[in-house]
Each structure stands twice: as structure tokens, then as C-alpha cells.
Image 1 (tube, rainbow, N blue to C red):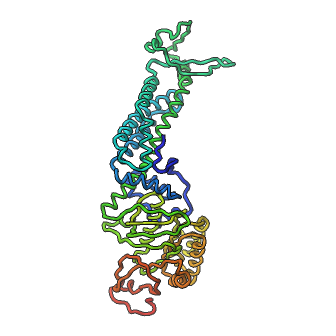
Image 2 (cartoon, rainbow, N blue to C red):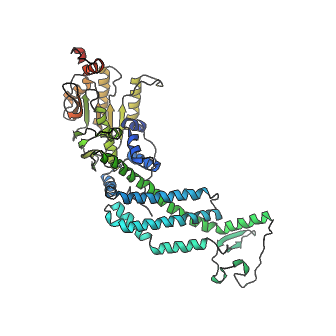
Image 3 (cartoon, one colour):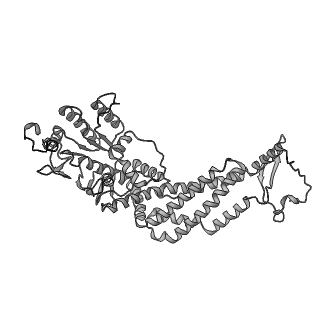
Length: 506
């Protein structure tokens, strides 16, 4: 029995190998902020959300399957949280019982399996009852199949058979077993037997069969004999214990998978509640297949920033269909880095099957999202900032192939403008020519101007807005790059007076 709420054809497994550049991606896009808001202290939710966002889905069909399940969760959050609570209860009970069992064979394994199954069967009954009363409210293929599976496999006959088997396996009448002699006189073919009805009570007081029989009673102080009898019991019970252990593991695995898969959706509910409480817009995005060039959004905002501040966050419009390169310029502290985060996080959330922070979002699927941000001085660096930037970009180019998204924030600004512009230009063109999308924030006017002159048809130019008085609106609008760094704004902020307008301020 599988839950299949994350994929239509397989379970969801959080364990995965980290990709090159993954730590930088997490740091640059501040993904921990999102995961903390989703988890609310629940480690299972956090790990599930982390894995789903970093792994991503490769096809439209997989994303829409997950989106449909999420839409059901958003409509019926109380039911989803109740099912998740049952999965948590089941796994907590299993862990508690496991701590008290010190043997994974024979009678110890049998006792563990019985104890766990008796609790899990009770939880399964609650789950079936909940499914029977709530299934009609869910529309997605994932939940519809999940509830159908519960109804089909967890019927009254199933529970009756389980109860009967568990009652027998309590062995209240003792252990009746059989064995044969091997070639060298050793016992073989050990098996647990069901006593006849007339011999189930006081089994040891009268023979189970009418043929001559022999008996042996272990003396009270014969420790070796007691150990031998215990070993015989384990041999007799081993096949049944292993079979019941496998059945128990199957039920435990079902609840473990259900907890992990529903943990992702409960995390989505937690994040949605936080954003909804602030009046932030969310939407289920429109994924487009590989090979297309779609990227547009309405009121796109950065959820990481929204989660950290009490006010709502400024959203931005984006129309970049057909553009492989996006170059963003403008004044410092104008919202460029925030815009980069909003775009990168939205792409990751879309490919995880989540909603995104926008009124509308449509984008081509990518194989991977990578970031290359400038770094501050670090005393542990073995080389200069520029060498470190080149080394990081070298690692990224070893894994970026085609249909990837590369997000750069003031890359190669650690050297002079001519050298930085030349290197950045070569990187951007190489990435775009191989079918990747590059979003590049820069203060290198020579770089931006060169692309505006030579690659205007395939490049979208955005600029952070600035009022005439230096006020930042935090809007990113389509506009050509300007040869001005607005250093007079820094002068005014520092000295509180107007800076003289000279060539040095441009």
C-alpha cells in the first residue's frame, strides 16, 4: 500500500546527493527562511520541503500532479493536518515500542511486531473512518487514488483477519511446534503449529495427540536447560516472527512515507498561512516544457523578505518571453538583489509543485538553478576575491549543461571594469548560446552597454527605479542601462547635504 501523493508512480524519498553549488544556492536565495516558515520546528516537514525544492520536478505532468494535490490541501487544510497527525502518532508509537525491544529475532521480534501492529491497526481504522467521511471533498488524482486504496484494502474483513492472527500469536496457550531430524541428528524444519481446539486450554496438562509421547521438565535451577528451551522457542517462532515482522515493516513504511509526503504539503499550508495573513498574493504557476522560452510574472515578490519584515513587500512585473539574458542595473539598495531572490525562489517553488509568491507566474522548466553572487572579504580565503569568484564560476560551468538558470549578483566586480566586463560578457554569451538563461545584476556599465548595443533582441534590460530626490521605490522596470552610479546618494546619506555633481559622481 502506497500513498503516492508526491509522484503518481513512486514514493518520495528525501535522501539525495547534494549538487555542486547547492550550498551557495541556499545561502544566496536565503532558502532557510522559507524552510523554517514551512516547518515551524517540525524536522520532518523541513527535510521534506528542503528535498522537494532542491531536487525539483522535470516535467509539466509531475508538477501539475503535485499542484492538484496541493490545491486539495488548500481547500481542506484541517483534514490534511489530521491525516498528518495520524501518521505522526503512528511513527511515534513505533519508536517508543522499539526502544523496549532488544531482540530482532524469534520471540523478541514477534512481541515487537504484535505490539506495533496492535497500535497501527487502531490508527489505520481511524484513517479509514476519516477517509470514508472526507473523500468526497477531494478532487486530485493523488488524493482520490489514496482514499480509494484505503477503502479497498482496509475493509472489515482485513481488520477481522488481522485481529484473529494477532490473538493467536499472543500464544496464551503456550508454544506448540514441530521439527524433524536431520542427517546428523540435528533439528530441522522447525514450525509453529496451531493446537487443536480441544487442546488449546491447559495445553501442557494433557497430550495434544493420542500417540505415545515423551515430556521433559526443566529443573528450576537448570539455567542451561532454560536457555536451551528458549533457543528452541526462538527456532519454532522464527519463521512466523519474520513473516509478521515483514508485515509490520510494510505498515510502518506506509506511515513513514505518508508522514514525509504529507509533511511537504503541511509545510506548504504553513507558509501559505503566513503569507495570506499579510495579504501577500500567491498563485499556482504555469510550467512550460523544456525548449520553450517563457518567463513572465505579475506582482512577483520575495517571500524571504516578506517573512522577515512586518510590512508587505513590493511586487514587480516581468515580461521576458523569448529572452535568454536579463541584465539588471540601477542604484544601490533599489531592490535588485531582492528581485533576484524573488525570481530564483519562484522557479524553485514552481518546480517543487508549490504555489509561488505572485499574482501570476509562468516559466520554462529548467534542469537546475545556480547562483553566483559576490562575496565579502573573508580572512580564511587562500586567494583574492577575484580568484575566488573565478574558481566558483569554474565549478558551476562544469555542471551547467543546457536548459539551466544562472543567477548572478554583481559577479566579477572585484576587478577593474574593463576586465570584469570582458569576463562577464564571455560567460553570459557562452551560457546563452548553449541554451541556458542568465539573469545578471551588475554595476559594470561597459558590460550592460555592450549587450545593449550588440544583443538587444535577445536581452531584456531592467533597472531599479529611483526618484528624482534619490528615493527608492523598490520597483524593477524595463529600461536601458545608464552610465550613472548615483554616488551622490551615498554622499547625501553620509553627510546629510547635497553632493557636488561632477564627473566623479557619474
